[in-house]
Length: 236
Length: 85
Image 1 (cartoon, rainbow over the protein chains, first blue to last red):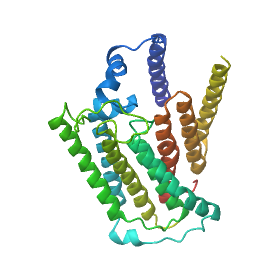
Image 2: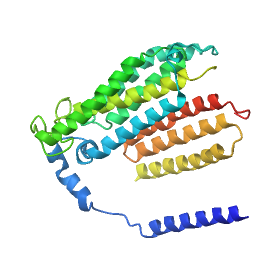
Image 3: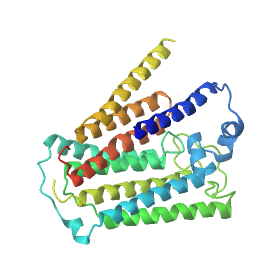
Image 4: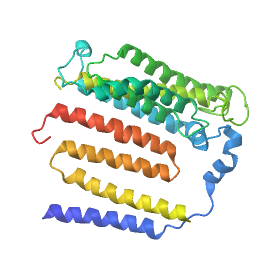
């Protein structure tokens, strides 16, 4: 009884909050405040053709650093709770035979998925996407690889190295931005070189480099989580 | 104008299907069906993001929401081995 009353109370409060938001909502016809500044000056100040990237990587660079840190923390916590030993990485499990469709499709698709992920994070300043998206796409490729052959051995030393080196490089570039340019993760550390151009990879300052490191780090981290989960399975 | 009607129609259909699948995910006794329903909700959400001109969010949602988290849920399901899975 008390439980139901509490649930009803929570729903009422939620409903009240949503109703307030709804009744005060009016469609904005023009941008206001800081978003106006981003829309008007963002392209000139940062030089990225993709304004979302400009905001995520430079104006809100600390947010990106925080997201990378959270992901790192998640991977660490998962590693802590799974308690894998060294021999677990070499273990193999008996599993049902994977379908031939999946195996063949994975052989065709995995290189294309990796290529697309790399494309997404290298062109983050020009086309939609960026480091996180590219990294996640690469990790889905790894997921497909694991599904096609559950006993596949990923070289986890390489994954760890890629993750650590790209994480450190990301922070170093951020601090270089503080030393050589306007602030943390400022992308003008090589000097201002104008607006990012379509079809030109290295065009928006350091953004392609920053995003490549973020992409590699995210991809390595999520692949690492998947590999750990796969190796922690004792039976299929 | 025609395009707008089509857009709103697709958005409404996707919204209804998402709500129905969310209820399936909550109320189904079999956990594996619930996980797949939650994954499909994510997939529809990513289509919705694409329609609302946010392709980067759509990419994240499709790969993480419907791809990786579904897979991780299945790993965990396999690890806990419940009888009603």
